[in-house]
Amino acid sequence: MRVLLRGGGFVNKGAEAMLLTVKAELTRRIPQARFVLPADCIHSDAEAGDAGGHGFEIQAVPPATPWRLAGAAVRAAARAPRQAGDLWRKRSEAFETLALLDGVDAVVDVHGYAFGDPWPPKYVLRTAAYVTHCRQQGKPYVFMPQSWGPFERETTRAGYRWLCTGSALYYARDDTSRDYLAELLACDAVQIRQSPDIVFLFDPADHGGAAGDPLPPALDAVAGPMVGISPNMRVYERAQGEGADNVYVRTLVRICRHFADQGITVVLLPHEIRARQGDGQRPDDRHLIRLVAGAVGGDAVIPVLGRHTAPQIKSVIARLDLLIGSRFHALVGALSAGVPAVALGWSHKYFELLKDVGLDGLCTDYEEANLASADDMIARAWAERGAFRRRLSSNLEGIRRQVAKTFDEVAATLRAA
Image (tube, rainbow, N blue to C red):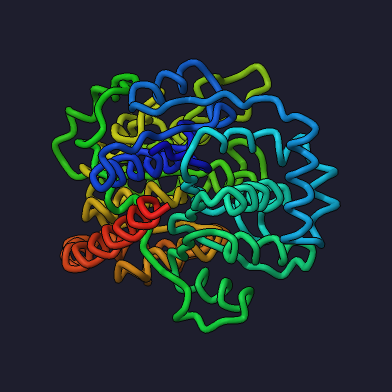
């Protein structure tokens, strides 16, 4: 069985962790499964090496023939007529990769959050084409647990509805996403499958093969407690100001100084790491780390600036006493390791994540992170970290069981195809 994985990659460490988790868990349940990545999710030779080192097959995108484009448009029109015109006009983007499906038996979608009003219509257009083609060929398309919605934009509601009704399985990973889907599909929320994020089962020990840069030696020299900060370039782009004057950067600098003044080591961890930097490339999280470390100065801050793998980043997170983060899967990495976390988020997914693990008082919107109430929240998280760790420990086993059940359902669906 060959399974195409969509939505993952090796730039974002959360996307990498999802790929590795799906491969590990489905291999346990379907030992003969082989996993394919579309070449358009690989952006450098280094990433290709990562994929190969973990045993993924990279499949080039073949050119689309006119008959394939026309046939796909007709099938899409039959399923979602309101979208047909856009699908045909965007055929080069929406259909050229459909030839990938000829050589696979199923598609598993590991997008973490890509379907809802915050995202461009091209996401739903391209994915609707995949779902349509899979449905026509009798191949299951499965959406792993992810955040969904909201769906207020009328021009894409039909497309989002088709993603769910045309797929073999789909899951919401939180209550808010489930409610958005229930409203979209005009059904009761209890009819929507729900599961925690799959990265709660991500174990670095399961994943050898791809080696990143060595981690900073200073990490091994730390004898006392450590606080981690996981910044997010997408939050920086939303906040006002540039460079060190950006509101979000100033907030992170203030948090670092708060802990450094107490003699507590702060580790700055990236979760978006691009193989190529400069020359017009979009900056990654390490740009923020350099800004923050430069503003704080001193030896109390350890910036992690190499090209590291998801297992390496998770191994550092597991050593922390507290994580303060704006990267969703950095937070999942901490919580799954029993490390208390504070979220400085930008969407419902952050609040839902902390609520699901019993830490719902430890999340705020990034725009409010410079308020005194956020400082109080962080101080409380540090002061009560032992109690929060115990609370996490009591909840984690149930969360892992739920995710394992989800993989059982997905594996059964793939085997039945």
